[in-house]
Amino acid sequence: MDESISRRGFLKASAGAGVALQGLQMASSVWAQAPGARRFKAVLIGCGGRGKGAMGNCIEAAQSIGAEIRVVATADVFEDRAKGAGKQF
Image 1: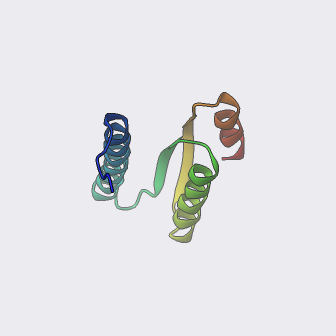
Image 2: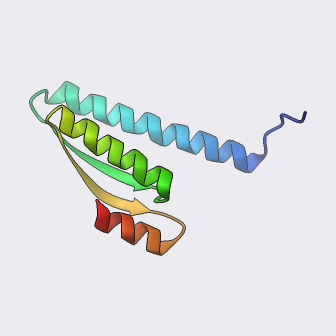
Image 3: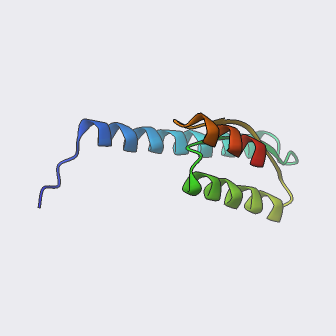
């Protein structure tokens, strides 16, 4: 079994991990600086079924703790998906 990883695969994985880490870091800094503030801005990158599902889960989780989350940007390789997700959220 060949378990080598391609350059493209490595870049995709590391970019995804970096974006997730940055999001967590930004969210934690918001909570640390303003404990009473419960407003967040979110960006959706990858507007297929999995991305939109994850954003829906994020919005539900925010609502469950009384927070407000606003999707400020969407991005996808396919323009119609990005626009559709922008309208949905």
